[in-house]
Image 1: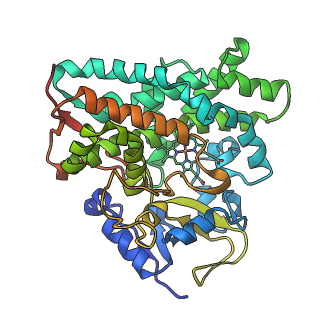
Image 2: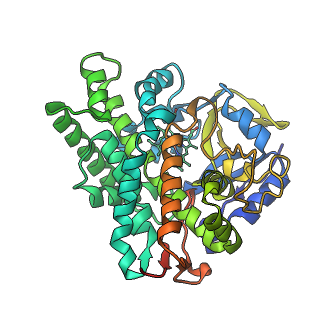
Length: 405
Ligand code: HEM
């Protein structure tokens, strides 16, 4: 199929605020659409639900960027990430993936995560205590961001003193590939993040505790089940994956409710709908947008289109999650929706390891905000909300007002 790649216009504020009209057009254009994504990279977007589901469990599609033919994919990574950060489970295929995932999967089972409920509630309440008297807050910086950072840091056993540095580095790293990113700033952020992770690993090695980082160190030192680079990459992945996406789920979920007063009223009325509501936020406008990258190990046919070996395949979960052949009335936010098996957490062997934790945090965070902040309203007109562009989507800031007690 000869197709002109369509440019995803990340420089266009209208697209960044609401990419769904273009997403819909891409899906209607065909099951596979060539596109130029963030960083000027060429990708083949899989736009429909059934094809997306199949692609995410297709072993011919690799998660290892070294299977890509476009050298820019590797070259654009800071030198330093190429050396050590790539050895993480998200970017590896079996058998390495199987071994790495097994090392940490026990810490994230639904049962283990359910045990964290009281602590997550406590952190949530403490963060809200600080803003409630004022009657106004910026819910990303004051709430959606510190909550998951605190939870994942505690799980790993990393102290919180460096939280603000940590946030600054991750922000700088995540704008990589977007137009405004300054490579020097990005590279420096990676370097500092590496130093941070290494410093804490050494401290933990000297004084092990009952936490995930100590368990990983012991898997490295005593059992040789992961090498040094893998140990750093795993810590780094858990810290970053466990935080940025969840910020966007919490911030994006609250923003979606504020834009749909009928759904907000319904959820206040029937808080037992919270778990369904969180699934609907993930489907309707999930944090990973447009989707999940893979690399074709050989020529692969999807929906009648042959994708050449070495190409980047972007399984566009955010587009597929509004596929009308899978979801009735897909552009409607409906917190009572049933049979809502969206692709926001992926599918197959790389299915989000942190999904139970993200769900728990999303439910507690959004439920508690609704309970404790009556008359919640945006402090700015909705059109003035700014959104993170490509890759990971969510509101940058969420200024709100509410009635103080
Ligand atoms: C994998 C989304 C929260 C850890 C993934 C994948 C997606 C995703 C789409 C699959 C990537 C792929 O197939 O290549 C999300 C969303 C979240 C979230 C939308 C929040 C709403 C978390 C949290 C953690 C986490 C809280 C906690 C540690 C991971 C890890 C992987 C992963 C380690 C790699 C799994 C593997 O490769 O086997 N996530 N995630 N995520 N996620 Fe999440």
